[in-house]
Length: 101
Image 1 (spheres, rainbow, N blue to C red):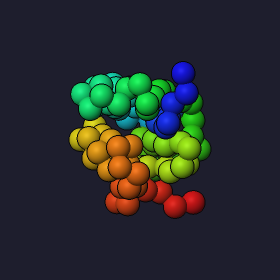
Image 2 (cartoon, rainbow, N blue to C red):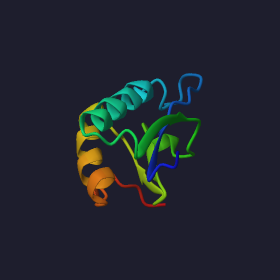
Image 3 (tube, rainbow, N blue to C red):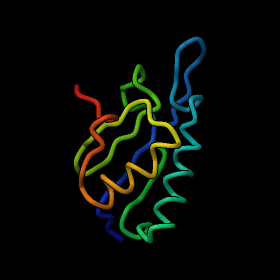
Image 4 (tube, helix red, strand yellow):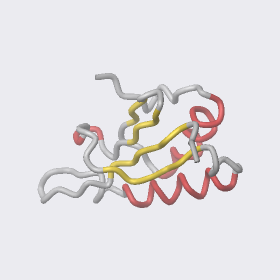
């Protein structure tokens, strides 16, 4: 099966005192994306899955959406519905969360 989009959520865990996406609710974000995608009937077109380090630790929890390569930083569980509605369903990035490198 070929997906239209992939959502990769960093779940990497580093040793304290460094901030890491995994300890900052990375796994909760994956679950929230899966629930939201299923609720909107998008689970067959868009896949949300965990990823290792996305090299944006200072901005974590970090999410990247492909094929666009849009990075989102400091993503909270409450942001998931907005990302799904705007970006994943309607191809409009959520500017307030987007990271510029």
